Length: 141
Image (cartoon, rainbow, N blue to C red; front, side, top):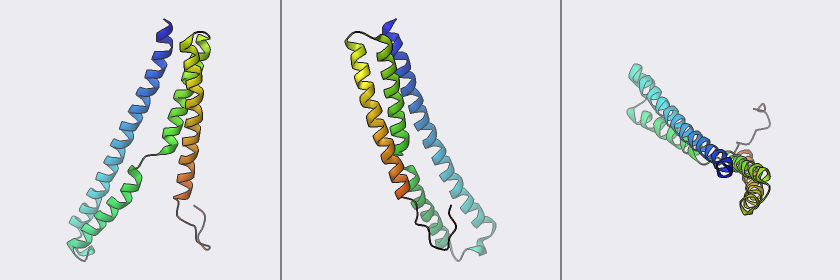
């Protein structure tokens, strides 16, 4: 019973993080596909709106360059997930209260929370620094 007490929440946390990653990837790929189809449909409905087929290819290429930024790793989510796993391990180590496993879970949980918070803060910093600069006359987003 004691081993199930700390294995089940950890496996559940890992499974949820994995499902989140898979779903996020599929949604991003679906959005990319829908954007390409929208450009091609617009070209199909009104070919005179584009100067040439080269312009359509350039628009799709520009769309792919914009999407390359969206596919990269999000450190905020990674750090938050690691912190959640650390909190889970920390709480289970606290519940067990004795033995080598409890001490290992507790210390490992503290390390995971610390590292997770650090990675999440780096993710927030990367997100803040990757925003475009606001011009003097432009309104704030």
